[in-house]
Length: 479
Ligand SMILES: *Cc1c(COP(=O)(O)O)cnc(C)c1O
Image (cartoon, rainbow, N blue to C red; front, side, top):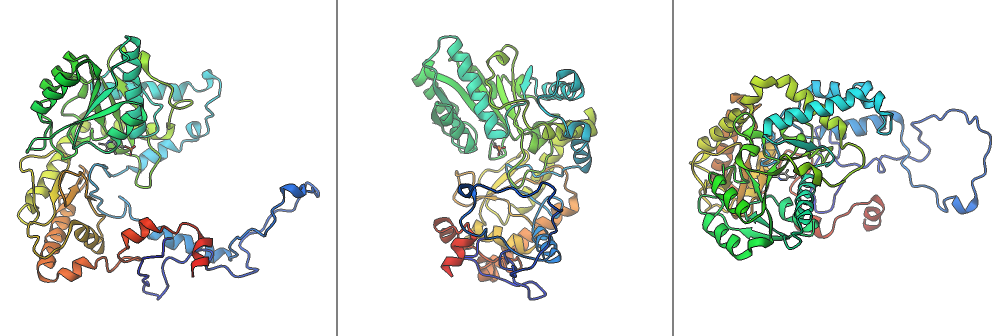
């Protein structure tokens, strides 16, 4: 637990939060009992013995149980509250997915088992691939990538392999919109490709004139164009037919970042729009808990013929339990309900946007898809920033939206409610956001010093970034 630069606070029982298990240690306390040693004495060679005593905490069992239970209660998740984190699709993860993923018949499989003993698992992979093909309009999927960014890399490697096979070794440039998710240029760079940025127009869409200029300029060095649609501003890129024609005529391929597939579900398909390669974040659109950084799955889909160029990016078959959750999710929604996901996610986002745009700055007006971006408070005279609003939301029991991303605006605050939330939840959030706007006007210091009710108060970001204390020993030495 990072304590430097943090104002410590106490809970109702006056118990200091943030105690490390090491700080609860009392010499000689034991919370374990080991079975009798049945193997006789064995001398560990001196060279392999540790030179100093292991610095382990010594606690009784109940203290350990309470410590970790209390820590776990500090977690915030979709199951505890509204989590409108833009570009992350923090939707409800139905519990049946967990039950399915935990079935011992699947959970206890070993990837090297003989093929005839894993027919069920193989069948599930095929069925999931079929479902994803039906939803995206593409022909084949590989499930090897472990996350969205890994999928991007895999997709770009597929494209690179394709161009090489045609002797097009000079096709090394990838066009990426300036609104793109940061992983897009990063993946292109890791793949050894060069990034060229295409500008956005005032309405937040790809600037066609700029794209045409780039295509004329770069010609046959273009490997691909990467697009997110709806884009990172939550806007549907209306000019995909024109964009697709420009890129394909120049000999490039179209890559679709499908991390934000949620609003498209049941509405339209990347394959039908002329995209050649895409990845899907199963952990976002198809519901796997992913707030803590994993596990993920970023399957890559391609149009017919490109599957021959899939690279080997992981051993075996990817993150199988995430695939099971995705398949359970698709089946429990069914063909009819899957069509409601996109429209309801879109409705919820627009409802919040329209209810707040008189107090928060909406730089790009009009219909959004699953998410939208405010540029801070409309009235900026109080000096209350997006960061302050986000911190104050914590006091009211909400997870903060994504902030300071996308980089197109100074005070970006990006809200994605997902399709699962009830009208009452949305109304509660709207009311609190309006309340915070009021506070910013009447009592700005209250907002600027938030959060006030969380276990840890306002973190000193600069100190935390420049002087992170990540080990207990280091902390002790500093006291
Ligand atoms: C989340 C996201 C990614 C990255 O996915 P990871 O699984 O976190 O690697 C890429 N692009 C977009 C648009 C995203 O929202």
